Image 1 (cartoon, one colour):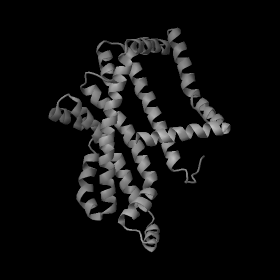
Image 2 (image 1 turned 90 degrees about the vertical axis):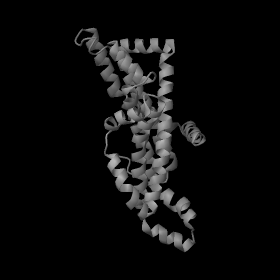
Image 3 (image 1 turned 120 degrees about the vertical axis):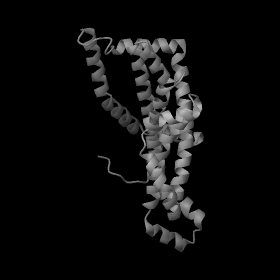
Length: 277
């Protein structure tokens, strides 16, 4: 997995270096996308400087940046962020593997769909906040409960998208596979998985997003480390700046991870001729 992501990143770098037009387009898109955040930050800072908003209610961007620098200097920022990303990674990995395997099973075999899918769909509709107290009651406030909460959220998007991706494979492709004499393994590797790949990658992207949200729930309910713990501690100390630092960290890291998956999608789905808007 890590090697695959590294290859994708290297290929994107090579593409940008060899094609300056692509690089210029990337910079242009980033600049356009940053217009609204930049404008919001400027208005926010001016409103705080002129006393139009209370600093306790909404601290200025500069004071938030100062709090972020202080946390970085003490090492707390890197420590808590590393702990959070480790938890999210483990929970996402376990949930994604289970979701992919069960999605493939229920997608390929109708009997497995009848046996497993109804129960999975019932569990899917239970919100994170409803099952989190039960998980903590079972496993305590340790790492197992946090990983279980993240796992429970990241499982379902990938399961559903894998199942639907397989079921939406064009039946004519199976006729072609029959003519070519593919066995079951060849059908799965060379026909079903490639045809369902767009849905599977979308499921991975959604699962990672839900895992990141589940991480917030897990750390806010009970934790001694992590970005959620940082926010919770700042709430008890009425330190609004640190709360905003935690929120912005969640937003930035989540966006970076989502952007990485978009690059992976482009790398593996380059053959699709989609409407670009």
